[in-house]
Each structure stands twice: as C-alpha cells, then as structure tokens.
Image (tube, rainbow, N blue to C red):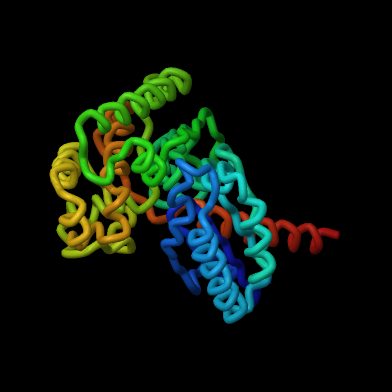
Length: 321
C-alpha cells in the first residue's frame, strides 16, 4: 500500500490538470495544460480538429508522466465540454487509442462533489457549512455542504456558462456594456435561484466561501501584488469584496492586448478573462459574500483522496478477514 501511486486527471473546457500522489497523499507531480478543448464549441457544437489534437497530445504527454511515476491507479474525468460536444465519443476514443487512458464523462453533480472534496482542505471544520464554487471553461458549479471531512451536499447547481463559452456566446473578448449586462442578468438569476432553493440565508451566520479555478487564484495574485500569477502562493488566500471589486474593475477596463501583456493574465487567458470576471463577480455579489478563499485544490485533489481512501478500506477489510 505504501508504495502505491495514484493519478487524477481533470479535463475541463479550457485546461487539463494532472495530479500524481503517493499513498500518503504527498504530491509527486502536478501539471496543468491549456488544451482549449472547448474553443469554438459554443457555435459549432463539436470539438474542432485542432482542439482534438491538442487534447490527445496532452493525454499522450500525461501518459509518459504516469508511466514515469509508476502509477497504479488512475481516474480521468471530463466535464462540461465533453458533456456538450457532439463528437466527444470520437475524442475520447482517440485519447484511448493514443494513451490508453480511459476518460469518464461526469455530470454536474459529480463535478461539484469532487471539487468540494478537494477544496475543503483550507477550511474543513472552521465553520459548520461551506459554499464552494468552481468557475470552469464551460460551466460553473455552486455547492452548499456541511463543512466536514466527508461533506454532505445540501444543494448544488451547475450553471451552463463558464469563461470560454460565455466569452464566445456573449462576445466578451473585450468589455462591452450591453453584452456584459446580458451575461450578468443570466448568471444573476441562476445565482439568486441557488440562494433561494438552498435556503442559504438560514446558514449564513456559520458558512464560509471557497472558490476554485484559476480566476480567483489570478485575482488573489493581483491583490497580493505578487508581480506575476503564482497559483501556489495564491492557494488559500482570503480575499475581501472590496479588493476583488477593485481588481476586477481594472480588468474590465483593459483591452485584450493589455490583458495579454498583464503578468497575471497572459495571452491565452486574455480571450476569456472578461467573461470569467463577470461570472465570478456576479456570483459573489448575489450570494452576498464578504470574503472568499481562493483554492488551488479542486476535483483532481478530491479524486486522489478518494482513490487512497478506497485502497485503505480494502486493505483494512482484508486484514479483518
């Protein structure tokens, strides 16, 4: 058991993340690749040949790392883009043919559950309840749960907008007031529905808020004035509403070229960061959040933790027999 290694792959609409750990949960390898798998998906309904090639190449590279670290158990999951693309089966088969990695397409509930499992590392037990929201490239999950080692989900929603598909659908590569207002209204209505259906106001006195994905980590890097985006340093940083509003205001007043030159954003992210900030801000406003903890820990961390827990249980049962 102690010699076993575990790998988790989380394939999103914009990025693919790999985490390899030993049986004690010690990180051995971590990598993020900007596959831009969902590029153009909103209009066409399919993955482009270029996007498929980027995705397949990413998984081939991850297979080399998995073999290098002698990984025993792998779980690879795919989220919004593979739920939406008409040719996702074709892509998944190509990944298998090239890398022998089996991709499991999960629904919004399972995505939220895994993110919750990973994100709780910073706040577990500090409050009775927790709200975790993950802003992806093609969807955004908001979850209210008990803040315990094995959290119980009280309510969760999957909003069908993320940074990439919202940027394309609402034409928000650069800020446009009319288009931004349309996106805010859509996200706002969904966030308000979450508040109402989750009875969030009844838990508000004993709840903390955690946000996963690169958007809060980039904002935390800006707020802390790191000089460049540093997701590891930003992990676990608490941001207050005033500081987030200020950072987002600066982003919304930037051109795409300025965002491309911004050390916290960069060229690839510059095409989708306006939409990301609008979604992120609208949600924390409608949820009436005063402080958010930015978390690098997400679905991949939840997957690895569960793989280790499962093996420990099997080992314990074998000893009992």
